[in-house]
Length: 271
Ligand code: ADP
Image (cartoon, rainbow, N blue to C red):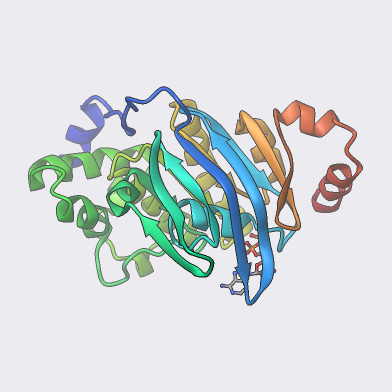
């Protein structure tokens, strides 16, 4: 009965309409080192509202570090990130040595994150996983949020599993729940960190299909991926990274036909 009710209701808009007409996310001069080894060297990346941007490149080139910095999951060594024109993360310098990492953490909830390893709470049901953050942030009444959860689960094809625990689901199903969970916060931007690389090959497409559907709805997204066909098909822009730097940031066709020998070699290697 619930399933019928949800399926016949109009689908909700899943992302917030931004009130700012500049870039949704702007990363400026990001620097990051681990153990004094530079992992990102002065990376600039600007994501417009409604844009789908894939980040590709060899293993170890800094893709995951970049996307984790963009969400405040790693501390910047230098640089600044703006979210809809507001400073989200930056490093403040006082004098020659003293630095302070400043995060405007209230903005973080506007960024949805989907991890390689799903990261669902194992002791909570699918519904409870979706309800936790929006309940904490008082984003609506229990009833309203439950209806939103049912609608999002329907959107990702997981409504029938609403009462299950993560261990009762396949990897592909867990990842679809994780995407619905991120959407519960009505994020202004969604970040995906290799969302299909922990999946069995036969489960990859069901997750890519959900992400592609979201892309077509105009949700702003940054996707770190090894799925080249997918990246080139769904993205407005593809960013190619190598050794902690952005080598190329352009439309998919330009990357593919740009005659950049390093990109050509990489694409040949992974296909
Ligand atoms: P990619 O996602 O492109 O494979 P990563 O961002 O994961 O690249 O890693 C870039 C480099 O940073 C790699 O050399 C990796 O070993 C290193 N690195 C990433 N995270 C850490 C960490 N927490 N501590 C130390 N080194 C790290």
